[in-house]
Amino acid sequence: MPVVSRLAGIVAAVAAIAATGVAKAEPVKLTWLMWSGSEAEVEAWKHVAGLVTEEHPDITVEFQTTSFPDYWTKLPVLAASNQLPDIVSLQAQRAPGFVDLMTPLDDLIEADGFDIDAFDPSIVEGLSRDGERFAIPYDFGPLILYYNRDLFAQAGVPEPKPGWTEAAFNEAARALTTGDRFGFAVSIPDAFMTYALSTGAHYLDEDGELDLTSQGMVDAFKRYAELVSTEKVAPLMPSSGTQSSSMAAARFTSGNVAMHVNGPWQMINIKGKSGFTVGVAPVPAGAAGSISVSAGSGFGISASSPNQEAAWKAIKVMTGPKAEQYLAEQGRAFPARTAQQSFWYDKAAEGVVGAREGIPAAIATARPYATTPAWASVSALFEQYAPVAFAGSESPEEVLETIQALSDQ
Image 1 (cartoon, one colour):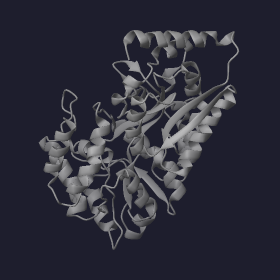
Image 2 (image 1 turned 90 degrees about the vertical axis):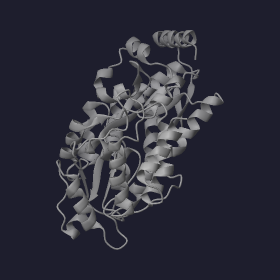
Image 3 (image 1 turned 60 degrees about the vertical axis):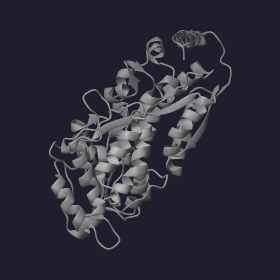
Image 4 (image 1 turned 180 degrees about the horizontal axis):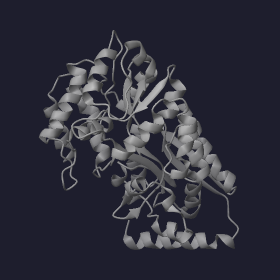
């Protein structure tokens, strides 16, 4: 969008907001697109949409949803056909590829006196580009290790704790693998990136460009793939169009695998579906320590929305204290608002061993999940090609070379 047009839109939005005190609001119906992974998530998001109407009776929010993988292919299609919803959901690591579709929020934040300092600064930064904010975050958090406490007890394996090493993880995974049950479930690319960072490797070079073929990354991916191909402590999950983290979570909640890596936002599905006691710990420490990636998501306004003022009002409610407390208690979000984080511990993670120690320990050593503008494509390529390495059909080095080459096109 031309700079002049963007500035004109922002000025109009700010002026409209300033006029709300004297003009009677007309009913507005907003559209909001968000990904969902379960019926519990759908109900949680519908509740959040309802909070907007509770506070602003003249505004209704039409909730639209799709699966996470489909969301990132659908968004560009909607943009190309000028059919973007008023409110767009953005994940920090994929946001760089979509910020050109969004209204910058800084002028709205300043004009409204919106307290952006109430949010964790790392995820506020994650949803910004070149200092401009394009979404208000609702959650954030490091990737963590979920484990089945019952299986650990049955196998006589000590439970993970902060400082748990990769060697101890490997030993536990072997001990927990028996019959058709596995010690661990691999997923890509996010969980693998925590594994690689913990070994001391990095997927980006010093200039922030994708660098998957360094010796460190090749070595890390080889060891990660061997968990499936030679150690056989993790099941082979072929490329199927379903996100590997979703397949890993499903295997975990069914009791088929004893450990998997995911975010605190998955607690809504894990506690609701698991028939066993759950524990949480930081990811295993490699040569560089236990290094997770910290990321999150938020809501922004599409630049093409004709309802900029109403969308801003809605987003303030959707990321407000009431919505954040609700999402925290449901386990759908570890709140980006720091004052609401206690509700995740007190309600969603009630009875989950290690949550109060594991999350802060993971946050303390986590790194912001830096990505490239084409990260949505990088993620899709990992989902497509990594299973080839897991199956042993191609070497991990060859697979990384393929992903790197296709990402560079």
